[in-house]
Amino acid sequence: MIKISLLMVFLFFVMLSVALLYVTFVPEYVADLEGPEGYDLSYEDEKHRYRSFSSNGEEIYYTGINESGDLIDTSGDAHWIYMYGGGCVNCHGTDGRGGVPIMMGNIMSPDIRYSTLSSGEHHMNHVPYDEETLKIAITEGIDSEGIPLDMNMPRWEMTDKDLDNLIGYLKDL
Ligand code: HEC
Image (cartoon, rainbow, N blue to C red):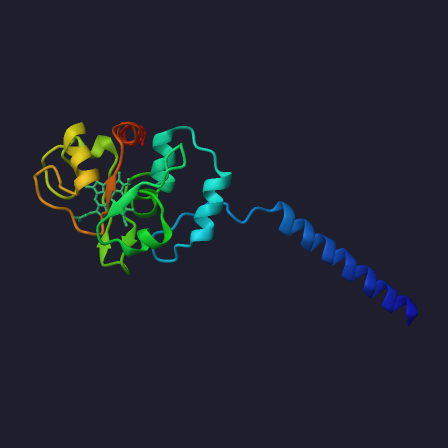
């Protein structure tokens, strides 16, 4: 009987140490990016802290924060972004091809790879974007035909350098 209880106590400590090791060493932030539904700030914080980005453009794309740590201001009607922050990835996806349902799936985000936008194959209209019209789309929310984009696409108040870096990243996608 005593042997069995000792064994139980021993097993209990083994399990406890395994649990502690797991909590300490297995990161919970392994990025499994989701759209705004199910979006979670602590997640984004962790990601920003632990993920290293290869360029300023990539960092902005993923976090909405530039390499100096400045949060890029947005306006528009994407309420969750005011509350939780985040970058283009949350709506346009890790590969920039869009297709992430936003606002309970009422609206789909488009493909924003530069190759698609500049070919006139993008979904909104068929006027090919160039760097200038793309900058206007990102900062003012006006598309290549001069038509305002849906308010769920935030308007990003970026410095010229951040904007150039971000567009450079869209070209790499
Ligand atoms: C909250 C979701 C959301 C975020 C975050 C977001 N977008 Fe968008 N974006 C959209 C939606 C939705 C549209 C489509 C708007 C429409 O249908 O009028 C769009 C459209 C666009 C377009 C126009 C595409 C076209 O075919 O004309 C560009 C360019 C764009 N987004 C770039 C960006 C960039 C760059 C970022 C990050 C700095 C970003 N977006 C972040 C939701 C988002």
